[in-house]
Structures are given as structure tokens and as C-alpha cells.
Image (cartoon, rainbow, N blue to C red):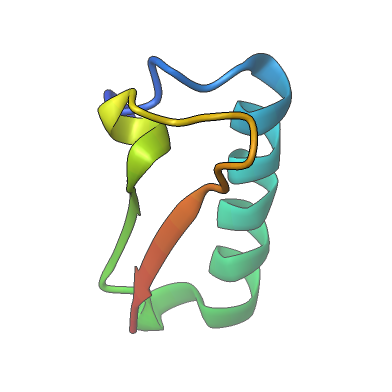
Length: 57
């Protein structure tokens, strides 16, 4: 999930890292891919935008 987080602030990056760690702790080897996508990655977000994360198992 690195490289695409240039528009994320420190709090958002920490939340994503914690989410990733929790998913990996729960699902471990079943995780095929995790991706952050949407407006926060593209840079066209606004104050109401959320963070979109895709987890493929």
C-alpha cells in the first residue's frame, strides 16, 4: 500500500497501518492483496472524503 499515500496525513497513515496490521493478524496468509484507492489516492478529495481500502482474500 505504499507509494500511493502522498495525500494522506500522519493520522490517516497511522490508521491505515493499524488496519493493515489488524487484517494481517486476523487473516494472515489468506490475504492476497490490500490496496488503498479512491479520491484520497488520486488527490481529488474533499473534507467529507473517506479512505477506501480493498482487501482481497
